Image (cartoon, rainbow, N blue to C red; front, side):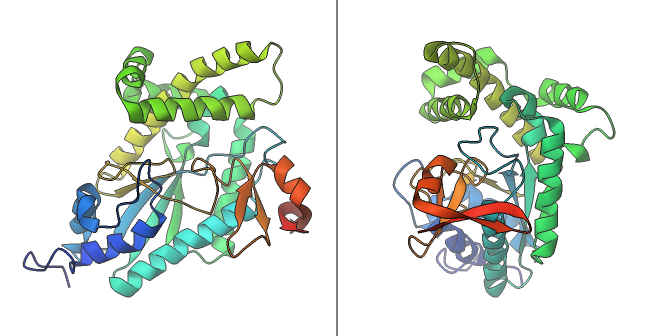
Length: 309
């Protein structure tokens, strides 16, 4: 039954649903466990619960593997993605225990939107996306679905699709530069993306300082493309609860969510590899670091993760 406005804020169905997400909030500041502090998420959840409909959440991410072999095991999804998909589907299952219509998460794979900027070919991104969908099917994750640039603008070439989406939705570099100067959240994102680009560059014909300057310029393009993708996803799913793999402060329009345990709040399965056996939770580490701590495990004939020695 849809909730009523006479319910206490602590017992409304939308607050109970949000309470299931809050332990996994990836935030830029101290955790805020009170659902009332996340008014935007409550409002969006309420849009579905008022109608007794399944809650839809969108999660931009799962783009492609890092092109740096020092960080990942290859260009296809592995144990990190498998565990993350199981976690997300399980989260939806727990919501169903609280709210019978349940929830579903649309994974909005954004690799194609900026693949040319980060140096990952479109065929690798296609292969990553295809295997990700296969993992969803093999895992029986019926509450998950995927959405990517292949769903947009028909059969046009990827370069054309990127141009159309960017032209329609992306902020200008000048706008982003101004935001980096005046908004701490944008500045933090800019620094994080720049660091990723430096780390993901496997080969560069120049000095370290030249690489950093080059990556700072590219970071603006990555952020612009990401903003464009987020706007396009919002246009396709206007009422959805907006999740993010990036840390978000309490009260932000997006809700940052952790996928796996990691020392680095920016770490994701597609920039790292998984190390098991060091505790109750899997760890996300650079491949070079995981290699020193464990032995490589294969699944389905491919490198999958490391197991602590």
